[in-house]
Image (cartoon, rainbow, N blue to C red):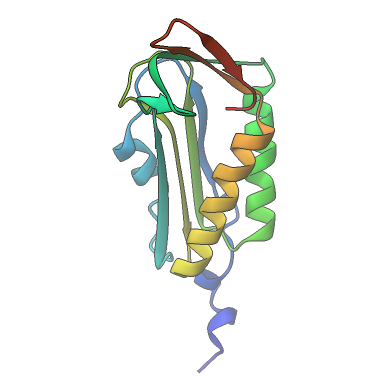
Length: 153
């Protein structure tokens, strides 16, 4: 019997980036989960970022996301780096822009890998790097009438 890592299913897929998008319409967990389905994956990790009703001790009334025209290209660069560093079988990431309400989905990312540990690590790397490197900005309006811009998601 061949060692486990010699099986093609233990390796990264040839074209693992299945879905990358920045959208003005509501995001779908089902769409992202279906995009990363892979018979050779033993682990799929999914992260969902939602709009919360507070930030920094203040109540949030409204929130809007906007992005630079290069945001999708930067998202692809981040995804390609994750694919290069982990045995990713399938990867998907979608981010919402426009006006959102408390409870709305702001970002959904998912990664499938041969094993759960790799999937967790790759998914965390994907969302962390997306948050810090993709030019998407958040504008929050607070209950007291103040507002603030938050750089990079």
